[in-house]
Structure formats: C-alpha cells, structure tokens
Amino acid sequence: MGGALPYDQLLVRSLRTAARDVHLVLDPVRVAVSIPQAWWLLGRKRPAAIFSTGGYLALPLTLAARARGIPTLVWEGNVIPGRSTRALARLATRMAVSFPPTLAAFPGRAFVSGTPIRSLGGIERGPAREDFGIPGEDRLMLVFGGSQAVTTLNVAVFGSLHRLLDRWRLLHVAGEAGMAAALAARATLSAAMAERYDPQPFLTDRMAQALVAADLVVGRAGSSTCAEVAAAGVASILVPYPYAGSHQRANATWLGDQGAALVIADEALSPDRLASEADRLREDAVRAPMAQAARRLGRPDAAQAIAEELLALAEGRPLPSLVDEAAA
Image 1 (cartoon, rainbow, N blue to C red):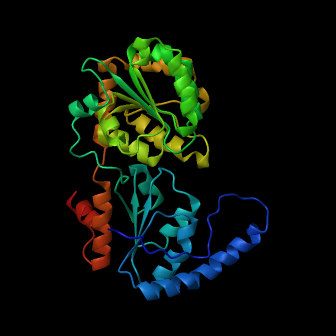
Image 2: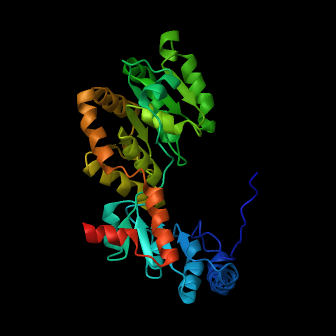
Image 3: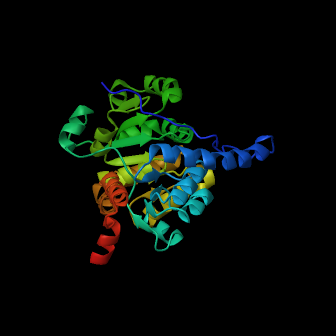
C-alpha cells in the first residue's frame, strides 16, 4: 500500500495573470524569499540531482541548486520555450526538449528527448479495435481536445455528424461538459448511424488503446498529443489552441511541415471544413504517407531517455545524450 508522496511548497506562486494588483508587488518578494527557502530545503533533502519541467515556479529552486552545486535537468515540451524556461536554461546543467527546432534556443546545452507519454507498448491494433467494436473494413476517427477548450472541436463534430458517420466510425471524447450535447446529437441519428457514434466524457484508462485503434486523430496540439500521435504512427488533424502564447501553433506547424499532420487554425475549423478534410483522409492512400511520417518522428522512449540522463547527472557519469552525439 503506497502512501502520499512527501511535498514541500515554496512561497513563490504561479503567475496565472498579469493583472495590475497587489501581486504585481508581492510576486518579486515571494521569489526573493523562496530562494533561501529552497536553499534550506535542498540542504535538508540533499538530492543528487533535480528534474524540473521549467516555468516561473522552478526559478528559486534552480538558483538554489546551482549555488549548492546540484546538477539540474530541465525539460521543455513546446517548440517555442517560454521566457522563464529560457532564463532557467542559463542556470540548468542540461536541457531536454521535445522538438528538434528547440535545440536552437539552447545551443550546446540541450538534447532531444521527446515528450514522456503513456505507454503504447504491448497494445495490438486488432484487439484494440475489437475493444471499441470496430469491424475490420471500417475506419475509426478519434476526436479529443485534451485539457484545452474542447468546445471548438465539439461544435465542428456536432455540425458535421451525419457527413462524418457516413464514412467513419467516430469515437468522440466530448468532455464531461459536452456529454449532454453529444447524447442529444446521438438521439437524432438513425439506429444504424447511432451505432457508429461513440461519445465519451473521457478515456483515461483506454486512451492508449484508442490511439492504436484509430485511423485518424482530430485534436489539439499540446506536446503530449503531438508525441502520442507520432508514437502511435497515426495520421492527424491538429487544431492548435489559439492562446497560451501560440505554443500549440508552433508544435502543430512543425508536425505539419514534416508531412505528419494536417493543421487547421482554430478560427478556420468549421463543420464543413472538418467534414471535407475527413472525407479526403478517408482514403488509405492519402492517409498512409501522413501516418508513416508521424511514425518516423515518434519517440515512445522519451521518459526512459530523460530518466537515464538524470541518473547520469546524479551519479557523475558521462551523459547518454553527449555519448550519442559523439557516436553520431
């Protein structure tokens, strides 16, 4: 029986807004106070190495780690790193990045690890499709929005549902808030069409099977989604979330430039556009090159690569990423 993981909290808080309020004054004070707090914490814990996913919250800890001579590994998941992560890179021992173009932001300090994702190992396509009731001759479209704003995707699906189901089976992760509308849309379908439409609030324990079973994925372009469609070797239509510094737009563009995805801007996604693109991609010969390109980009062992690099830092051994660079 496992217990709760030990947790220590610094005074620094996440910068969720840039509002001109009392926190505009207090946040720099919190950072300043958090540095000696982190120094004391590291002295008590005495870690051999530190792993961070970057961001503003990691700044005090990384500063304290550098002062104590503790090696740090920082991971950046987007093509375009944020300003706080760029600042952290000057303090970190090593940077791991998900996308090759990001190496240019950290010259001589980074390696491409990929994005840690759920394991797809041991999942066979045939049994996965049987689990979702997909006959061999049918094609499965998986639509999900991740954790970012599924409304745009849901509206496009509901508006094109009859056209989509004419040629696809549709596994639609509508989110808990979208389920009422999804079930209402399903109620308007004939029995034969309704059997081809499977709306779900979420697929927490079955998402890996869904990715392997799918012939086409429609989703956002967060680092994890991009990594998972690549690892699964599945064609995708990516609709980047238009906010959060346009990070998803850069992620999606890179996959699109490699021929691994079709990218549609959020404001350009309409029921007609989704239906027409899905109709075109229903043809195996059209979809296959995209799936092959995605598979070439996949890094399903990203978590292992990061763990090996971190252990080498902790033990003072040659870093696997540098050994691989020398061998190449």
